Image (tube, rainbow, N blue to C red; front, side, top):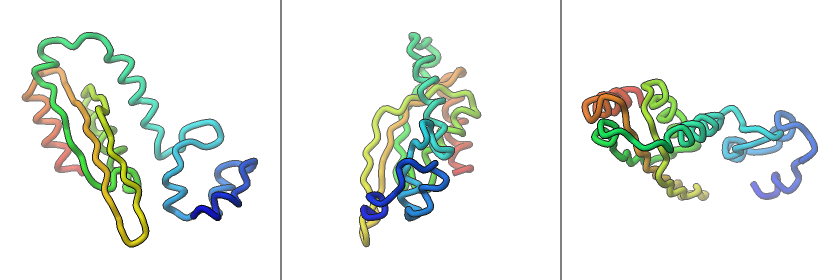
Length: 138
């Protein structure tokens, strides 16, 4: 782990440098070569969504707003990415309210938790429909 990071060639392109790292360290890398790695490209859309939704919410959006609590191996399994992609597909507005990340340790796998506020045009009925659909796909 740490030894591989210390010996990694920081001047080499990511595709070449990552070969010396374990799969878990490769998967934990968020940026490389000055951009988000493929697995974390969703972060740009989260940022754009957050900026676009700083406008006041309409009454129907507030009525249909809820906070999802998602727990599990959110990052190493790609669960958070999948969840946010599904919300985008359904054109829901979302904001990551908080994330509690606990790193995995040898012999002690742990889980992380994220709280995501979700709202949608169409109010509570539309949010429930989106959440129910996501349960089937995750």
